[in-house]
Length: 601
Image (cartoon, rainbow, N blue to C red; front, side):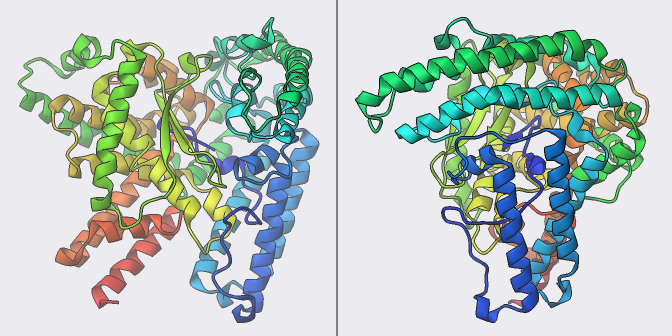
């Protein structure tokens, strides 16, 4: 699963079918079988069967969770596979509807409701034929596959044979993606042309002349001691053949398809409303990503109000800094003064690591419970860095064998200002994505689908809220870093305006770029990449500010209700204690906490 401050992320909405089964350290139901009601037993059985279906249908996802039964295969993405999974989901939802929800304990009622919401969203997505657009301008099977060796076990001969089998399966996997996208061309479910400019640069680096040039080759350069010396020559030869005879030709086929068929057929418009049944589809995306029953127009108005509020705070910082020019001149100063930019990738990575190490020491003051799993910092791979955003996060392995990773973009250092590092790092690692996701995976007593999937509004809303926690922890002490924090908050507020503006209100791409440039200190490269991301992934960017506003609203409500009895550690533990949930469930959890705290229970 990928989470990014620009998005990506979590999120896990791609894995919507199922929900809970045997994994290392998997949580057990909260009550023993003899104590459970018939409804609870039925629900647990449904979750177990549904989760098993999810793992079988998504073998690489299963691998990341520590289930090694399917380590030699890639998933199926054909139209037939899409239909099969949706039929399975409908069947599970029908079974769910026959379970007496009222007789379940509260926590299982929450699981019931979350499962239903995830399932209904997945079925609705299928109805809109969204699967015919399986990639965006920045993400897809073609960009994630070269990192396969970083997400699979490679400690034994069998592990290497499984890895090689997946390399051999890549041509079939590629063909199925191409056929989906051909279906998208026929049905008008196709990406806008403007976001596909330069997409060949994410593909051609994998059409190599020598296996050592492939990003899939590193496992064969250095074997772990646990792989016998006698097996290494054979595995190396098989790996070389798999890369050169399977992977490279498949990438060549995909490159030819994209340049000769897909890009020429891409639509000239940018709005989701221009897709088949596009207006209804975008309204669905707005509700799905925000988890609220809101319209594009309501979201747009909220965004405009937030932009105005944040802009006033930014103007105040400019005045307090002693700068005498206009907002635009201050932003130009930030974009061009060398003091705000690293000279080397190593300097940027070191600055990022120092910020996070300082925050690590502050976490016990903010949280009663911290995750056991650690995280690391790595540069984004060079083949995707020019077309992706400033940073993103990858979750830990479900079996505890791989830490979380905060990926930092070191491409074009003049577009990576140091005054953004504090807000960005608190968002992506701690107390943002890593802390929340690692804690969620370690929760006990929850079905696995709640430990390993979730809702973008919660996940990204929490990470944006986490940026603000730096104000309580000794960060943003100079006007430039504090302006950087507000720039990041403004960035998310602008998303509410430009996403709805482009997809529902007829805005042009340039209007969106200009609006963000006029209201933030983001570099123009970042702004352009971001706007193109919103075009290619409609609705997703609305989740961040929506979720953050709800968390801040609930914290204010708790502070006012509890007064001196309010403990921020307790509040944060309540917010994170049920994993990633719809915002209505979060509201219910916090208000229950308020009632119990006031009653002294």
